[in-house]
Image (tube, rainbow, N blue to C red; front, side, top):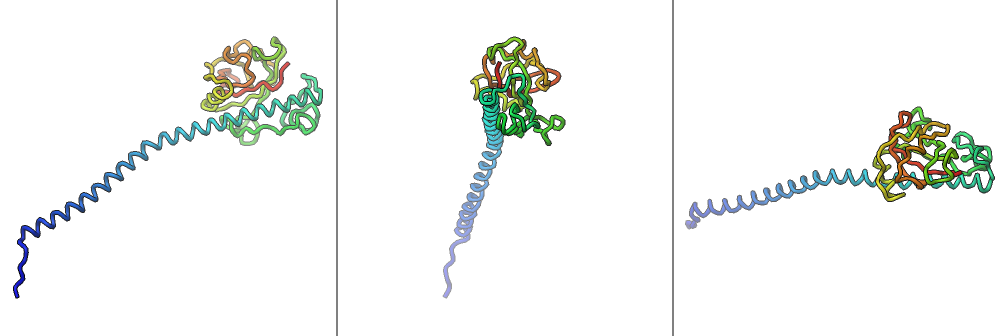
Length: 227
């Protein structure tokens, strides 16, 4: 018995409809993938920036804490051991005398980590990178001033870390660059007093931008002993 078949026009129309549905689904998936790719590309920059900012903030907090710990050790030398100011020893290699900051019988603290410095030393010496220094200086508004220099703990840091230190410790922006003397010099440095940023007067913790030929860059500082 002969079966009736639909006209060819109907078959063609049906195939066109199915093909359109398939192509539409593919185009939709491509469009979604394109949107996701654009979102990832746009977000990658902000993610990197956010990670850097978080790292700077974490380092700033840790460095401020280290500075506070150094001050506690100094206070112990003066108040418990009655060590004269001129006899205080901040050499990290000296760990036996009661006048030594890093001695168990002295300041009672361990040498500070320098891993958060701008370019950390690989062996704890300044020849291979940045480490902590303890220069003598006079910060205006702190101590008796004049030539009665105080003891500072300083560490060279990245600019972003410096900005976060000032924001956390004082709530100000990092002051403009100035010649603040050689932070790496062991002797007293009067230049620190005359060129110290006015906005940091009286603040025992902060960060400065130094362009002295002997020690150029951004430096965290904390006054850990006052006279």
